[in-house]
Length: 293
Image (cartoon, rainbow, N blue to C red; front, top):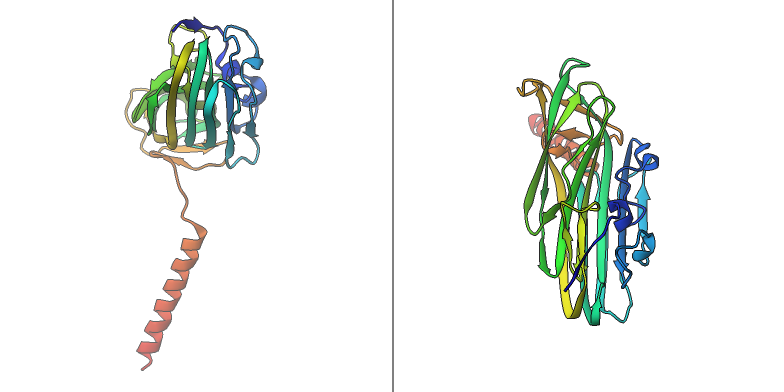
């Protein structure tokens, strides 16, 4: 098995939907993107989107609520293949599975990518002063056989240096964290991405321009990367410049999604409110009836 390191940007690796640095996508105050694709023997050193065949894409920007896509591929090198990607704010899900049988060294793998980007404005400290935002994401899932999972987080702003977590491998339940310098009252963009790959090996590579290494293989093999049970944004902790906790932390978001210390704040379903209101009305009515006896 031989390794081929390639210098594609991660955006090219997973298709045009993954735009970690594309101004057109980040110009929107928020966005959800999902994509799946397959390498069907294309030379992975070629700087071309053609290395990924049949790339279904679901992009959601203004009015976004979720992005979902799935696909399977028919190819002589594949015995079976399937990938799906799903993106929500604070919740990314990917799944990739492939079985291959190759007569000579070659590449046959499928990939799934989900990404969210959001404008955050931290509040709670004096406007215009510096602080920090501690962010945590928790991934649940697993890889079996020739498969890989990867995470990438990045933040962009006008008043502080851009930063990122680097491309980090995932093989099972994992927590990722980052400390982001912020200015209270000043918005910044937070982007995070979850990737699954299966088939001929694909691995995270911290020394590669694209953050990924592709390996050729021959014979039979298979793998599954199952992170369909979510990468969750689980913690948002605001700190003052001296790292003390902000007493009344608040966040404004471009999408209107509500965020709190434990990530996305899930609103109480309207149906439960109606049921609760109905129960309160019934109880009050029964009390009045009994009281009138």
